[in-house]
Length: 256
Ligand SMILES: NC(=O)c1ccc[n+]([C@@H]2O[C@H](COP(=O)([O-])OP(=O)(O)OC[C@H]3O[C@@H](n4cnc5c(N)ncnc54)[C@H](O)[C@@H]3O)[C@@H](O)[C@H]2O)c1
Image (cartoon, rainbow, N blue to C red; front, side, top):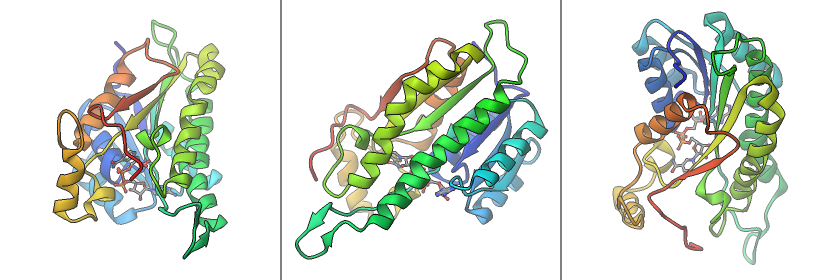
C-alpha cells in the first residue's frame, strides 16, 4: 500500500464539501495539502485551521496558468503524489422548455469548462509534475482522482449540461490511465450519489431528508468524509486504475 505521508496532495475545490473533507483526510494522513479553489475566504480559513503542511492557492480551474501555479505550489511543498479533482458546478435547465425556449449555450459551456476542462487542466499539469517523481518500489509515481457523478449514468430532467460534463470525465478515465501507465501514474474516478455538502445544503432540511430516503441503503445522504475515505483508499491501492467507482448506496436516479 502506497503511503501519502510526507508527499504533496493537490485538491481542486478543496475548500468546500467533498474536496474539503478530502483535504482534511489527506492532511490527517500526513500529506502536504494544496487547496486550489476560487473561494479564498473558506480556503484561507481551512489552511489556518490545519496549520503546517497546508497552503491555499486561489485557483480558477478553467485558467491554465492558475492551475500550473497551483501545481507548482504543491511541488514546492513536497513531491506531488496525488491530485483529487473536486471543483465542480451545475446548471439545471431542460434542453428545451415551452416557457423558457432552448437551453442557452453559455451555461452549457460554463459547466463543461469548469467540470470537464478544469479536470483536464489539473490532470495534464499534475501528470507532468508526477512524471518527475522518483518511483516507489512498485514503480508508481502518483495518483489522479476525479469526481464524476451518478448523473453521468442516470442524468435527471434538467441535467443535460451537468451529465454531459460528468459523462465526459467517466469517458476519459480509461484513456488517461492508459496514457500515463508508462510513467506509473494511475487515474481513477469516483461517481458520487447524494452527498451532504453545501451543494445540497441550500435545500430545505425536509427536501434533503426526502432525497436521503430515496437511497436504498444506507437511506441517508452520504457524508463527505465517506467520499474522502474512498479517495484516500484509491491513493493507497496500487491496482485500482482506469475505473469509475459509484459511491451511492445503490441509488439509481429517477427521471426527476
Ligand atoms: N454533493 C453531491 O451530492 C455530489 C454528487 C455527485 C457529484 N458531486 C460532485 O462533487 C464535486 C464537489 O461538489 P460538492 O458537493 O463538494 O460541492 P461544493 O460546492 O461544496 O464544492 C465545490 C467546490 O468547487 C469550487 N469551484 C467551483 N468552481 C470552481 C472553479 N472554476 N475553480 C476552482 N474551484 C471551483 C467551489 O468554490 C467549491 O469550493 C463536484 O464536482 C460535484 O459535481 C457532488
